[in-house]
Image (tube, rainbow, N blue to C red; front, side, top):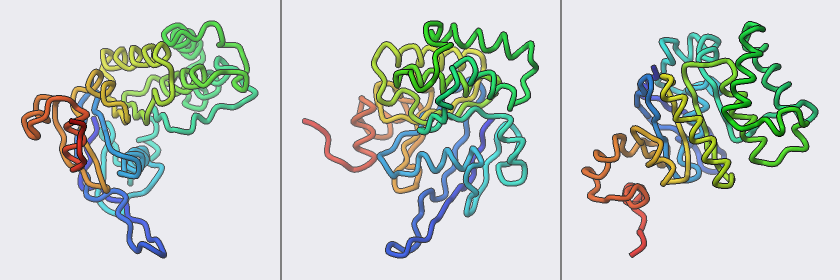
Length: 247
């Protein structure tokens, strides 16, 4: 459902010259698969996600999302995806229920389906106690649940999730992880960026490591272990970045 081919995004910087934020990256993600994208800060993860979500235009290369090209058919691509970014983008004066209704209508979800969908997501993400509380009164965990529900409300076939559990406590992260596994069970195609190695190892069917804009490796955990000779994802990650690991 996702095909990325030679995707690059270069920036011009007065001091550094040409910065290759993403450099000739290629990968594919199938229906019903969680594809992990790992890398240190500044490696190119978020830029890659913004490129395939049509928020940025590539310098070269291309990608298709569920058959639609990110360059020639960006509007069609946006209808296929739910994109969770680091910026939650919640309206402070609206409640979670109102936010879901608002974004559902923007996505042209039929009204009878939207009411049902809103109720299902409030139940699935354990939002009943705060569904009708203004967003500016919510905790960070409540806001993150709302942002994820907003990402899912139009029932897109492709999910692009940028660090969905960052800074969350364990109970909240567990609810979100369960929701992501349910999305995979329903056949969603999911790209998942995270800094949490244990989470990636638990959730992802395949994992790619990106550094300095380049994809270093991609495969299942068994394939990554075979390629590096390491067992834990943490050690595999450090090995690929050529960083020292703990004794």
